Length: 320
Image 1 (tube, rainbow, N blue to C red):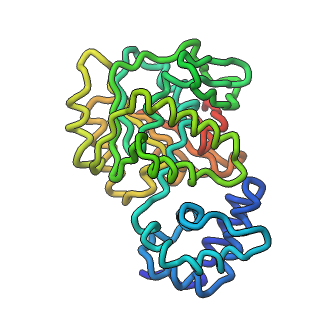
Image 2: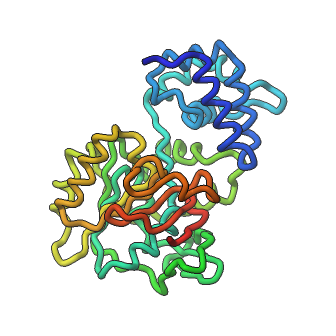
Image 3: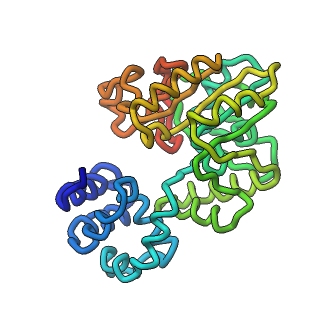
């Protein structure tokens, strides 16, 4: 059923108040501007539902025509360039390939016998396929990168989080995505950088460093659907390595019945399954009250059991 204009306006206001407030004053203003402009809302309503989200609109606008000058209204700025914006919105998606999420995955990866073979579903450019090539600052412990120029990701770890003392041995790695991004493509990487919110300058710098690192030895990311290609990709993994299949903020883009099929598929493959998703995405794994004091957090689970609360961009990890 098609949304009403009011429903879409409410979605943008909710984004302004719950997600952007206190994090990005720029996007809070933009979301409010969009919510109050009927012409822009009507243009958005002509798009498929999955293309109406705030992050995609803002990133596409920045990618095509940049930020509006100070004092100018965002909605009018976007409307003036709508003929250029629309094809970008339809072609692109919010593939937030945040490598800082590796800081949340690392304590879980360290629980498995090495060497590891890892597959990321929804890998985008594959930057999260390189957890052994980055450094990490957990506050009470630090793992320094072994490669020159590698980023060090800050992550506030709870006292119970089992911080590893060394980086994992990864023997083989591969990614799967409906629309992979190529780390060697300047256009793809510019799009990825545009997805970083305007005020997050340090995160932007770390992303640039991760891209530079990945370009030295690009990860293998193939195009395909998670139900159709995961098994074939897993068959390529070396048999003397422990297979780990993981994903972050991916299952919210597929139907609930597909999530169930995917869980069964991973189980049948005998792989370790790490899912880093919103609490309502896998309701049998986590309940929303698990996040009462951490609104907006993700839940990291292992083989269907919740093991940690995590920051959506790797800002923190609270072991359960």
